[in-house]
Image (cartoon, rainbow, N blue to C red; front, side, top):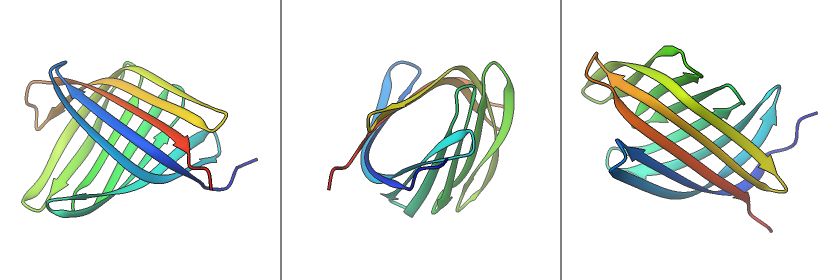
Length: 139
């Protein structure tokens, strides 16, 4: 049984190589479909608006971005997966390898985390830690 889309407040925190951190607060929606859960939100960047969908499960995940920046980052525990990153000046091949994937949702609060190696166009991999905390927005 799937639940309807629930409005949520989302905090996205990305740490690169344990020393560079980016944080984002946005509002979006949470819903469940099949064996996975999804977060959907939009953010404004210099290039324009970017729509993001995060598909979360216990052993795999997928981040899809569309709009000003197009990106497809798949994650599966301990497997190298190919993705893509497209910007106005070109498309780049990416490789991700997830070392840890956590996902939980209970009583209107959720958490999704992925620790992964990321490389673009064969460059040396950087370690990324993505932590997304979200909670239902009470009307």
